[in-house]
Amino acid sequence: MNYDFKYHLSRRGFLAATAGLAVSASSSSAVASGVDERGIKIAPGQARFTGQDSPITAVWAYDGTIPGPTLRLRQGQPVRIAVENGLDEDTTVHWHGIRLPNAMDGVPGLTQPPITPGESFVYEFTPPDAGTFWYHPHADSLVQIGRGLAGPLIVEEADPVAVDRDLVWLLQDWRLTKDGQIAGGFGGAMDASMSGRVGNIVTINGAALADVGVRAGERIRLRLANAALARMMALRFEGHKPVVVAIDGQPCEPHEPEGGRLVLAPAMRIDIVLDMPGDPGSRHAVIDDFYDGLAYTLTNLAYDKAPPLRSHPLDAPLALPRNPLPAPDLANAVRQAIVLQGGMMGGGKLAGVGGMMGMGMPGMTGGAAWAINGMSMTGDGHAGMAPQFTLERGATCRLSIRNETAWWHPMHVHGFSLSLLSRNGAPVPHRQWQDTVLLAPKDVIECAFVADNPGDWMLHCHVADHQMAGLMTVFRVK
Ligand code: C2O
Ligand code: CU
Ligand code: CU
Image (cartoon, rainbow, N blue to C red; front, top):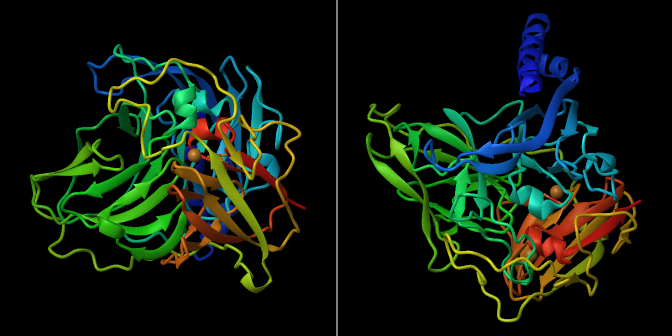
């Protein structure tokens, strides 16, 4: 089942060895000249979320694993990924956050024909940016992501920061029935017009973990990715001081998050550097307290009994090398404005869900509950979507997004990364670039990007129910 993955590993080993023998000084360009060949098979599978005794849950999986295999690519090295659809319905793969050619973006109808059952599609691109990304379907997204299709995609820096371990936590949120199966009722009207399908169990790399083992004194780079359909998270590492070094794959000025809380909305990634100052044998909770009154312990950092790896925290720089993003020319920018509208009145962070192990409303596939600038584009992408606005290639776009609704929305732009300028009139610090920006109710954000990549690109809320129910649009770069 994983034959392509193994093939890749040996091939990479071979390439690295060859490069090392030939020209050690320019080994990265030697490696970059080869095409990295991969394959992924999508099919129904099985998972156990809560250990060996837990019920077997029927899922849909990439290469049979939840989450899908971690794709580790090299910055600037071409990759070719053959995707085979073993489901009974159409799918595509979207490489979330990667700046790639429009035809490789994985939006059915808009950028490619859907991959029909039994068929394959070969994605080819060269990742320009190092960082933490992820991949997921862009067809029947609510159901397909909700049944498990998501995987981490890491593009390695030529010179990574010095850490003892580099870990990924891909976080998924599941709505399970009492017998441990994925609940039906996707797209119910309550979910669609309120907080979306928030589930009742959160997994880290496919398992609900009581403990994650760490060693006193070590330094970990932890790549957090929220692959939930709708669940926002705000993580606190008790007794620890995470330092944010990248958001949505893009390096920022290293900083401690406000109040020590890492706010991670669906589709967002945050890379942190975490020093382990705890005592050997101690245990520290990692708490998600985004929703008022519904805080829970995601896992615990469980220290090994071994003596600390070092007596003082590692004295190494934290800043990552920045990616080659084109600098916006704000003086000559074209202004565009997006207004988010709709949803149930009242709002708040969470409604229509009874908390952990609560059940949603029975299914009732609704129509449009949301709109962008008065227009509701529903579904996942299809042919004939008229662009909301058109940008000349090379122009700087200064985009404002205003949330007129009473709900939270992680707004995502395909194909570009956005330089965050301001939120509610206040400048955004730390030189942040993001492809997914969370707006609280009534927030207004301003951002900028250079329209250097031609094509029709999606812009949508990444709460899957909201996207399906109209919080989506398209813009064109020509
Ligand atoms: Cu990760 Cu259009 O989405
Ligand atoms: Cu995307
Ligand atoms: Cu939304």
